[in-house]
Length: 302
Image 1: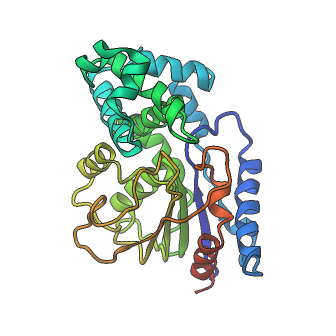
Image 2: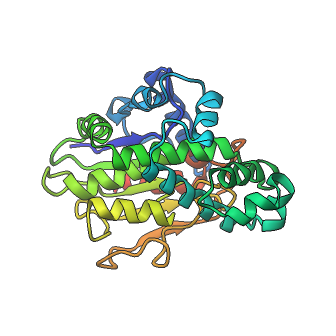
């Protein structure tokens, strides 16, 4: 029986045609494979692309990305726990980016700095500083991505809808290479970790691209759903790739940032992807990487 390839997408896919999106992912993967003079080794009918973009879009009531980001930044329709979660993630982005108090004061004034991270104006100032000082960074996009991760991890009904859709693309006993991106890496990890063994899924390779799993607050929340943090038992090998300029994927998934218990099988990290997309986070700039594409190919033919 041939193997199957499953793509799990990230956010900002609403109102798009799932067939066209699948074609874009396959095209980018084929571009990466062509660098090794290879082609996709399975029929496209064996590539699964469960689509949940409209579910996420409904979280912001159909508003545009700009409108939704503005609402997140202002803290509207956001409870105390979500505000805490977003603040924590954004503060980690600020520290990783090396944004200083002086740079924040130049934007928001010293009073905002003195109030500190618990003040919502401080968050607005940090997001503006990301726009100004972080190459390829967008404060609004990071805020929206953080909100989506929070809703998936904390909202059981949203999580159930997404998990049910992705689960339907996995077949008991059929070897499936799982390739995930951005929020999709959180979905993929949580689903495989919680349900993979019980449902008899067989994953020769789990690929995470542009993953935020190493961000402290996200890692802790994922662990609260399924402890301990470990390579899903249905997964034989885990390959993680990132561009070090990608401000969503702050860290590689090493023993320092994403410790596993047990430690083996270890996650193989690739941190030198040169993502060609505008924000250095887009899926096309990951799948067209020669090594990423070759890893997927080898798992499909192995």
